[in-house]
Image (spheres, rainbow, N blue to C red):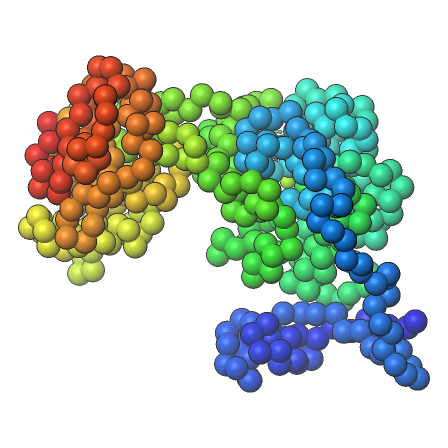
Length: 456
Ligand code: TYD
Ligand code: MG
């Protein structure tokens, strides 16, 4: 059957099709909604064939085999934890991250372990030559037995290699450099990426092979192909952390087989990624000496308590518009905290530049870190250090300190790290049982009480 290998651009919002790319859909006026798609012609002389494959048949859920298929361990417990306990056979796992963050290193380490426990494993590199991969493997000190290496950019070659080798796990590095003959357009174009990913997903499902696919993150932080890839994948993991920081954090953005609240922490060393199982005071760079603008938040990362230092700096704005910058914390959250501090506490922050930073390149998303962020700002603004204490609490718009969950785990971790003092929401204080040994706990009902208790 002959197919026309042309592509067209289809608006993902309204279905409008055009022969060339347009920034704005003339039909629905949506911006950047046109995506390149392969156009297949109806064969000459007639009717469209109903589906090419076998018609799908219903099965009883009870009779579906493989429900208990064991998960495959990657040899990196932190990686397994983020996956929800290892790789599920036949799953399509996407790993996104900035260039140079260590995606190839992580996957080569995992592939090397899997090639011993579950040989053979295929490592497809569309970016590096086999010699470069060998060089990295030597540097990592991993054996290469049972690990097949294929350096190609052709999707068809990858498919053929998987069909021939029948590996349990295959790594594809990266989806943006992969290219299919069947479709026009340069490698990395939205149409190519989507088509290649869809094809790989089918291979994963039909051949029961786990596909670990690297995906570069675009400038605006999206996985390529405006999030379309995320729908295809079973798991979407993000490897993050500043390239200049030692620590790398792997987190699940989507996981069909596990929770998305777990993180895995790694350290980049001269010989590859090393796991950091014991988080401890990793994100507490300050040795405890009193400095203005520093506060410690007792956070939860998934099921793990984690104490994190939040730093703030306030300065008189030099130019008209004061600047507000937050790194590691949502900037909308910062704006709300500043407004609450100004309105409820009377601090004149409206004319000040405010900078907020979370230590270690960590991204703190839970509202329970509000109290520490607010106290860091207060401390910087007053230029007075805080007492050394673990702070936890969500701040409401009227300046009230709201209760948080998992308080006992946060407090235990604080006590374990040698904290003697903690400020928690009053609502939690009222219901809290015994405090961990050596930890003095104070409750705060609102910001005013929190400031009183937190300042040294
Ligand atoms: P890499 O895995 O190539 O990143 P990605 O595939 O995400 O682009 O690793 C990138 C960085 O890691 C590179 O700058 C060098 C550093 N690195 C180490 O520090 N130690 C090592 O053992 C390896 C292999 C890399
Ligand atoms: Mg790479």
